[in-house]
Amino acid sequence: MLYDPLGREFHYLRLSVTDVCNFKCSYCLPDGYQCETPRNFLTVPEIRRLVSAFGATGTSKVRITGGEPGLRKDLPEIIKTCANTSGIEQVALTTNGFNLEKNIQSWVEAGLTSLNVSIDSLKPEVFRRITGFDRLQSIFAGLAKAAELGLSQIKVNAVLMQTFNADELSSFLQWIKDKPYTLRFIELMETGDNKAFYQQNHVSGYAIKQHLLNNGWLPVLKAKNAGPAEEFYHPNYQGKIGLIMPYSPDFCKTCNRLRVSALGKLHLCLFGEQGYDLRQLLTSDQQQAELQQYIQACLSDKKDSHFLHQGNTGITQHLAMIGG
Image 1 (cartoon, rainbow, N blue to C red):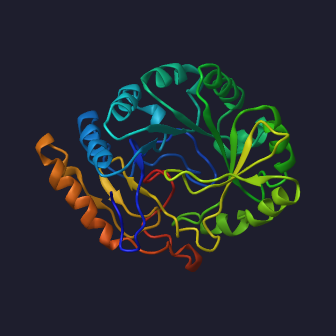
Image 2 (spheres, helix red, strand yellow):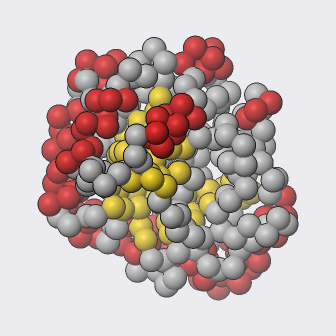
Image 3 (cartoon, helix red, strand yellow):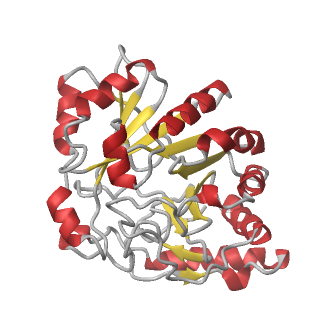
């Protein structure tokens, strides 16, 4: 089992397969993708060796992220590779949903067990203003198709923003009343290039948590490989609510996830100061023991918390860099 000096165990890998994204979300890439790094992203054989090492050291969940992972034509092969790796029980995907309706069947057939889709507004005009694209109805259709295909773990992510969607809470709650989705409200996080936007738009999730608790919502018990969200259910709702509140006290206390970038660098924290290059240990199947030992050695540098409260965002200039 992978563990750090604080005794935290790591059951969950967030694996970026590209830093390219075709959306222009106001809080992440308002000017669009700028191609700031080489595009020699991890190959499928490299991904197989990487995930095998994590699976052999206690990781049971892999989340495939980007950028936008749906831009990789070999995404079904990547999903299948992860799903067929010893030790891996769940293969999740986070996507902006632009080609969800078209490709969800091939992803599910490849072994996808969990789906996260970003929908920051239920209003088509606001969705278009945030993302730069008019794709909301297609994304809704893709979600419905995912449910029809039997995918039971479907989550919708919405980043809370004061000047965009802060007034949509009641609409979102009504939307999931008859839908089997988990709607996750995510606090806007400061990154290296969005300080002014963050100061203007940050909304605390605490008030939403109190609203839920005051209106009959009850906490959901967290699984060992669950993400950072606090989840709630209500007996009168099909859907659940999740809150991701990185500025809340003790947010990092139960951290159970590590990140690998599309270029093969291990990141101990989304807002860490550096990445540790794993790629030199992904060239041969005979390097598995050395790779596992190196990953464990890197964990000695993991800090007890991020430093977002101090305005320190590390090397993260935008969330598409290493998988959000």
